[in-house]
Every structure is written in structure tokens, then in C-alpha cells.
Amino acid sequence: MTPLLLAACVSYSTRPLPASTQWISHPHDASGQPLQRISLGTAVKRALRDNRGYAAALVKARISVLQLRRAGLLPDPQFSASLEKPTTPGPYVNGFTAALSQDLSWLLTRGARKDAARARLTQTRLQVAWQGWTLVQKTASDYVDLWFTRRQCDLLQQQQDRLATQQAALDRALKRSDITMQQDAAALTTLSQVQAQLTQARQARITAQAALNSDMNLAPQVRYTLLRPKMTPLPDPQAVQSALQSLPHTRPDLLALTAGYRAANADFRAAVLAQFPGISVDVSRNSDTSAVFSNIIGISLNLPIFGRSRNTARLARATRDELHAVYAQRLNDASSQAQTLYARLYQTQSRQATLRQQLPRLKQLSRNANKAFAAGNLNGAEWSSIHQNLLARELEAMQINATLAKGRVALNALLGHVPLHAPIPHAPTHSDSGSTP
Image (tube, rainbow, N blue to C red; front, side, top):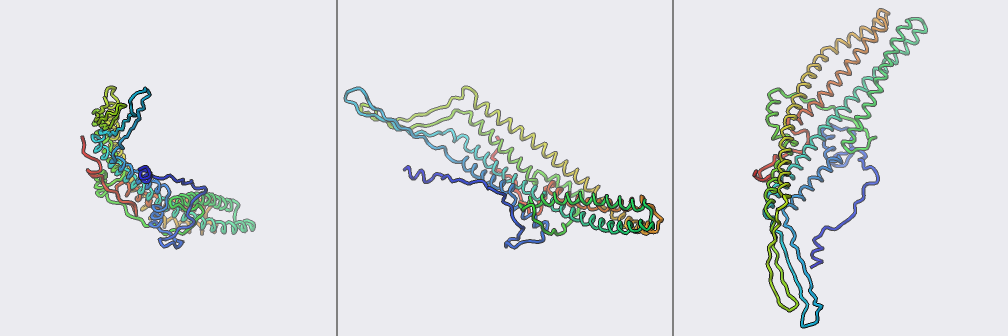
């Protein structure tokens, strides 16, 4: 009997923690071939497959499955035995008692506890789905950041090279007294400002590269070429309002809170049922020292005298009330965040349209300023101001493009639209949660 019982047990084995980092050396496709160019979709797929934090969340979902199985298991019966050995001389024999007992109180609460476990399993799966959505959003945002910081570095590098070449020519002209010292100083000031901006952009590029590599579990030093991210248009106001009305049925975090509330509701129902006295049945076989054999059937009751079970029920009800308030607040916050972001993106899009009209004129003004400056018809301060204004507007246009690209991804998630390659959630059903008392 003992070997059979031991065979059903889970065996123990050690699992040491990693002694070093476990980065992936280089991005590769499904066949294992290295990738030199990565699209936004590829980055998202890699993050969902290789990100360590998301992998831990998937393990947590498996733990919830085991908890559901445990909620449906019967409590183990208890077996007890005793030997009675007489010490008084006489015609006595050894007595014994063998008893088997089973707790029956679980019959009252088993259904409610299984309902709670089902709801918590649904909650965990939805939380994992929302974490997947969040990971997709972050990966897309980091991808866009890296793409645009690289473009900013390219623009500033080109500007620095052009100004450095021009500065060398101006230094030679100053030695020949062909230009004034003010003109040379103005050009040098402009070059210094561009160099400082380039340094800042390179630092931002390093940060963005590290963030995207971390999303995909790549080593920090891994480099690759990014494909231009596609820009999706903003939804119209009617589509936004329609999505806001559907938030309770589409957002995984709200669906998870719904499942959590139903789990708390089932816990409250189980706690109410647990107020009734606990019952256990005992069956025993007995032989005393006079060799008289007896069969005994007993019933035990737990008397709820001190109010522990009633306090547990009150605590479960308060927990359910808390989750009710949390859900209401989260729903309000979700709607407010989505509407606020949409309004900000709409204003940013208007500014983008304005810049698109102004940039060609500013570039033409810059070319005219170069000619006037070379002819001595424009002083250095005005020439430097024109060039700095053009560069600032070009950088602003890049930043606006990045803001719109990241904002559209975030808006889709806030509105409950499934992001690119993200897990699709399912709404909790009646069988997940049980009925309401």
C-alpha cells in the first residue's frame, strides 16, 4: 500500500537559478536564421515569445489551473489506530481501535469554492492577456523611439558635417579678412549648438536601443536595422465613442476585474455557507481487553460559538464591496484616459499639418540666408537664428511623428482594440464565476 501511495506523490528535484545573464545573442526568424532587418511586427512577435516577464506571467496562469483542480478535490480521510495493552494480571487480551473519519462540511462549500477558483483562473488569464497587450504597446513604443532617434541622429549628423565644413571655410576666410569676426563667431556658435544636440540624441538612441533589446530579451550590444513603422490614421470621433461604450466587454484589464469580482462573490457565498456547523463522520472498529468487539459510528459537529465564521463572512463581503468600487473607478479612468489621449493626438495631428506647410518655406528661407550671409548682406546672429529655427522645426516634426505613432498604438489598447499579434481575451462566462447569492 505504501509504495502505491508514494508512487502517486510528486517527487522533489532542484532547479538552480541561472549563474549568468541569459540574453539572446541575435534576432532570428522562425527557422533560426539571423535577421539583419526587423519590422515592427517582428519585434512584437519576438517580445511575446522571448520576454522573460511575459513568460513568468504565463507560468502564473498555469498555477491558476492547478488551484482550480485543488478546489475540486475531496479532503483526504483520516485514519487512526491505537493498541490497548492491559497491565493488570488476569484473563485479559490486547485491545485495539481502528477508526476512519471523513469531513463532510466541504459538501456545503465545494460548489462555491470551485466557482471562485474558475473565476480566478479566468481573471489570471485575462491579466496575462492585458500584460501581453501592455508588452505589445511598450515594444511598439520603444521601436518607434529607436526609429526616430536614429533619424534625429542622422539629421543632426548631416547638419554638423555641413556646418563643420562651412566653419573650416569661414576660418580660412577670416584669416584672409574676407569676413568679420562676428560672422565667424556666429557660425561657430551654431556648430556648437548642433554638436550638443547630437550628443543628446545619441544618448537617447542608446536608451531606446537598450529598451527595445530588453523587450525582445536581446543582449544590450545587439544592433540591427529597423524598417519604417507604418502610420495608422486616427479613428473618427464616432468610432471612439462606440469603442468607449464597449470597454467593459473588450478591455482585458476590465474583464479581469469582472472575473475577480465574481470570484470574491463566490468567496462570500462560500463564507456564508461555512457559518453552518462543520460535520464529520467517524467509523471505527473496537476491541476491548475482554475480547468484546464493537462497531462504532460517530458524528462530530464544530460549534460556531465564538463568531469566527461570521467574521470571515463579513470580511468576504467587505472584499467584494472593495472590488466593486475598484471596478467602477477603473472603468471611469479607462474612459477618461482614452478620451484625453484622443484629444491630445488630435491636437498633435493639427500641429503636424501646420509644420508640413511651413517646412518647405523654412528650407527655402535657409537657402536664401546662406547666399545673403556669404555675400555679407546678413549678419551672423540673424543667419544663426534662421538655421537654428529650421533645425528645431525639423526635429519637432520628427518628434510629432513619433508621438503620433506611439499614441495610436496606445489609443488602440485603451479603446479595447487588440494590438498587433497580441493575445485575444475572452469574456468570463457564467460557468467561470457561479451564480450570485
